[in-house]
Length: 377
Image (cartoon, rainbow, N blue to C red; front, side):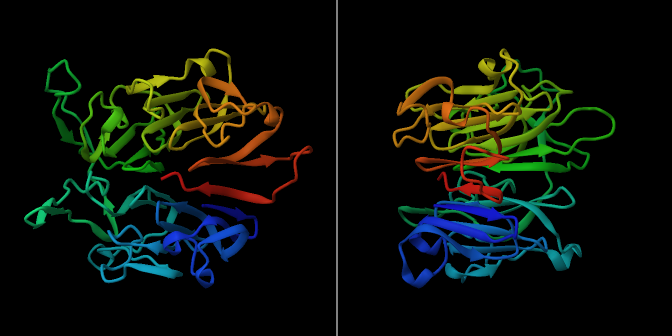
């Protein structure tokens, strides 16, 4: 399923509607053509069975299934086909009622970013996705395990970094410590079971740090090990002083974009290739002087667009989602010839699909859209 937001802040939805992820719609299991399902929307984020909307007033609302709290509702509310407000925990205790500016969803968890640069999480904690330092694993019955999931968006302000006093040469074994100074965030992204946060830039020119947490399979967290992280941990292999402007996540991979338009990659988006355990620059783009402006990743493919109207893809595309003359895979970045010369203002990778918003296009039908989002889980 997919959602596009137009310039009038209407949310247009289409695709599979299992679990009411696109609303009640008279019980329809599929919405074959775009249909307005919400208004006053700034952006939307899609999980496997839930959708979270950021409204123009900075509040969060959701649709779909919330069996483990991924919609940010109270625990007794498990599903809704009608847009329902999410709750933020501890607002009375903290005296803060946050206004949000970004939302992203994993398969069964959600991460929101407030105007103050604070991240809020809700949903499954099985792999540490809620970033609160624990999974709360416990036995429900003799042979069934449960987790302490979050039913409502809770602020997460504890960040970790490698312990500088630990001289262990192996990244895989190094201890971490809590970062003492407050960390403010400018961008977030969620994969299937992991998430990324990009530090806000400062006036001292110190660069911007990237943090990751959740499931560590395939090196998707960038810490050179396949271990889950329960707190946001600094990706230390990225050189200090570098400035990043965006992060993106696929099901099992991560991307970061520098202020020079270079893309760093880690994880594994192709089942038949070796995992990249820590960030590596995408040489095919950097060495050819491509300045990347937008990027996205799905279950098995990656897409990048440049300032000069070049779009490149690589990975697996069994349903034609790569758009490279019917080829079902490409191990290296390949040009999407049908988009050559078209500047892409936004893009999204979903399950078996890639969506583009074209800027000032003269060859393809114009879409008066601000943003677009697809379900990749």
